[in-house]
Structure formats: C-alpha cells, structure tokens
Image (cartoon, rainbow, N blue to C red; front, side, top):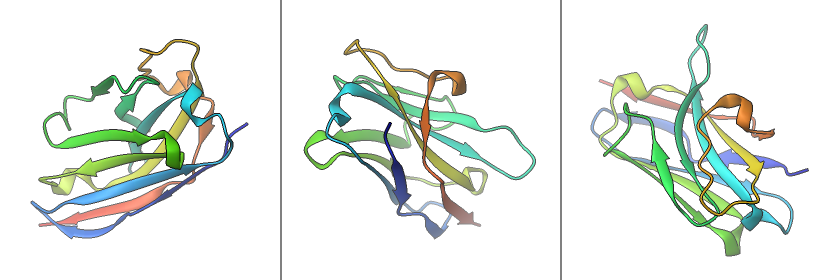
Length: 126
C-alpha cells in the first residue's frame, strides 16, 4: 500500500494561484498513475486531473487551461498548479493513486483509484 499526504491549500483571491503537493510513501511511486479530485460539502467527489507513469495528462473541462498536473518521481511527489482561480474552485482537494502496469494509463473515475490522501482545503474568495 501507499500513503498520500496533501499540502499547499489555503485562502486565495479570485484570479490568484496556488500549488498543491502530494507526497507519497514507498519506493515504487513511479509505478502508479496519480490523480487529483475535489469535493464540496453535500456533493460528490469530482475528477480534476490525472497523470500517467509516462507523464501523459488529462483534465476535467472545468479546469482545462488553468490547472497543470505534474510529477517528480525522484521526490515521490505529484503537484497541481492552479492558476486563474475562481470561487467555484473552492473545495477540499484530494490526491489519489493506483498501481499501473501501463505507461499511458490516465484514470479519471473514482472507482479506478485505490489509495487516497486526507485532503487539503482550497478557498477562493471574490
């Protein structure tokens, strides 16, 4: 199993930027596809972005062009750079991981992930 810890959340004004980090335990980080999801109270957790073992990426339409997911295998860390933030981006952001045999696998469904962090709060004010 792998443990995930998110950091970097906070309060930011609309139009601002934040970079979230997700630190993973273990020494096989490069074998996992990684993703970011977000959730607001009373609503379902929604897909944000994913990155494959080979760094292929895929984004939800709502964040395309504004958010960038990346990974640093040497640091066992995945990042989410969030630019041009909007109030509707306010949510708890979760990091997720799943073992991947393939290099191009970019999962976007909740059920495709096996490991989750505890989340970090992002609040965007107008």
